[in-house]
Image 1 (cartoon, helix red, strand yellow):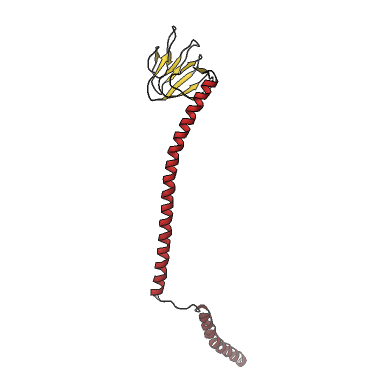
Image 2: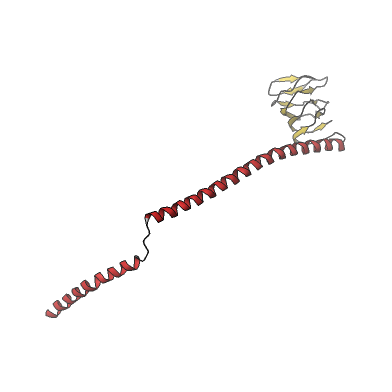
Length: 189
């Protein structure tokens, strides 16, 4: 029993002598960083802020320049596409003897006529002037939206569904640039 007490006492003594030394060693290992003053730290942060603000300003200037160039390019490309589309339409009409039979959305030239077959559906989507109906002696164009018959020479309302009841020369005369949606067969003359 005496040996046990001595052993416990030695163990406690060893821990009390070695323990604080281990803690101080750990503390000195982690504190090897040099101290810096607050004024130096503020100086470095201010320099970084200034550099960041300069880069942000350069990026904003670049974005502004690119946006301006994109808007200019967009307006120019829209005009070029319009001219190309009109040229392609006129070339197609001249080469095809002014006859086209198709379906879908059509842009036709001023002074042309759309002559549709029976069952063809026509919707005038846009016109910067008047477009008039071409009727036959048997009647006009059936305006399903308005619920009436459009007679020869009368203006066609925009966004109204027109149905051609017979293949007897009925259609539309275009006096200004217009955009139509057409389902069915037709000729452009």
